[in-house]
Length: 255
Image (cartoon, one colour):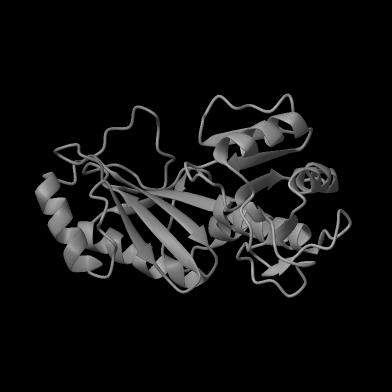
């Protein structure tokens, strides 16, 4: 995920521009020479993507193959307002302007960090939500095993059966799931997702689920799957089997 800005040359002062350049930056060779002059230490190993590394940020420049070059796309990652210095130094090398593709407007100067800050807030919120992952496993215990006991590392488990049968049960139980990746089926709810890693083992020993997002209603499809396979829901973090949809303590701890 990146904050995308473009260095462009516009007719006049650029006020009110829509992000479409009026004038080319120059020939491909001229553009490369000016970028190297502005940043002698830039990483130009990849002919299409040049990278400038700062203390807490990186700028990737899409050099492309166009000749002449109409604009330079900059993908900015990381944090720190000092990244605005190289962004505007690059624009000045072409007597150009900096267009924020997210905000839909030209930046007024190095101190115009509103778009950069908005991007970082959005990125951090998405990242935090994605990292709040709760892992549970669908497991079949052999006859006589006690589900009240923690699952030992060498605990024997009963097979789910043939891979084709597992796929058939999944399709019947959660027909709304995205099955475009045969190894990882995805069920999306209003505020959560459940990823089911089916894999390619045959027979299938167990089914790991990765739950992301928020909302207690995600427990319903988790236990719907457990009922369909006649198995239990094991929480590795809590080292215990869940008792039902209302058993939310470990789920809430992750959220």
